[in-house]
Amino acid sequence: MTTAFPGGNPSDPGYWEVIFDVIPFPVYVADSTTFDIICANRAMLQRVSVRPGDKCYAAIYQQPAPCTFCKMPELESGAACGANYLEFEHFNDLDDRWYQLRETMVAWFDGRRAKYSIAVDISALKEVQNALAEAHAELALKNRRLNGALASEQEVTLNQRNFLAMVSHEFRMPLSIIGGAAQLLEIYTNGKQEAGEEVAKIDRAVHRMSDLIDVCLADDRLTSAVAALQVRRTELAPLVEDICREKAELGGAERLRLTIGASAAAMADPAMLRVAISNLLDNALKYSPAGSGPVLVSLDGGPAEARIAVADHGPGIPADEVERVFEKFYRSPSATGTKGAGLGLYIVKQIVESHGGRVQVRPGSSIGSEFIITLPVDPEPAD
Image (tube, rainbow, N blue to C red; front, top):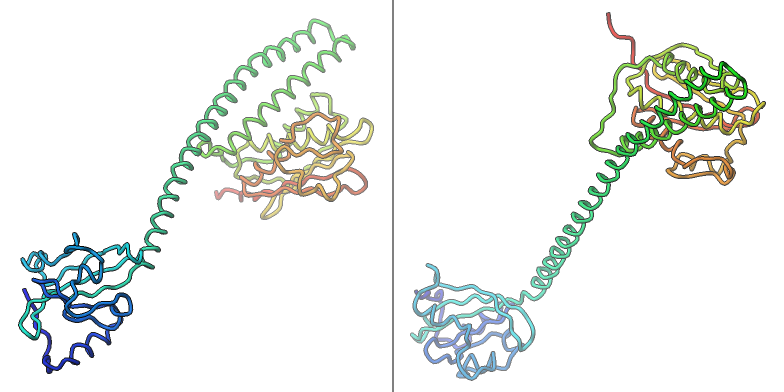
């Protein structure tokens, strides 16, 4: 199919030059039979030196014969996908540039059939496309690596969780046996003071191991996306009283003083909350020297929040360490010689915040530190 150019005076030699020269892209017209260049616009002449009568393949592409990518045969046969033009991309290795070529069969003014070709430089577009393709490939590679690392991490986490569960199970059984044996020893020794002190040591050691297992399991539950908190309405006063009673039975009766103000209830996981409060009490008892005075524990409920405070008589926390004491595995340099893994306060913070509360520490009135847990209260259920 051919397309006639619009009217005017095509016999005027300057007619086509004026029309083509206003086009900012290289344009040339070549005879479809002889491949002779009929005319070329200014943009084409700025790129290559061509004259009418030159073979297009030789003058433009420096080829000895028609180019292998030449679309003249398709245009002549009308196999242009139902249109009267063909559009394709071509890389010119003479100037290392990419072009989008649009070629059309036309009826030239002197009656010859000719190919009209316009070339648009798309090298910048190709660079952007290549950069995007490289970025996409790099992103896909990083994504595969990330997925692989994530799968490995999940496998490690699962193995760690399984190991922790196994160790917990294997430790609890012998600890239970040791605890039961300690109770029997206390009965068999008929309350003898020396034997009773040794039995108490065994009992305290068993409880310390049990508490450590609870802390490790609490850390695992808090970092697991699967194990959700078992939340229910929990009266705080009985919980705090029970924890203090447990510590008193382990030899801390004279070292604890509990004050209950207005009671309150919270939507909480009582087992996890027990771990948090027990950790604060254990720390307070551990760092308060014998004879320094009792650890002060208080509970006071308000209209919106409940406040649980634990004040000790220990060495206190330096101001520059206040923000760090809740970090995982952090141990103060002043704690040298005191047993601990640096997990306790971290677990306290994680548990309290998972309940929508907060925990803070501030210096005591004279010596030591006071840790305060604040929890949102659950209002009285409607009758």
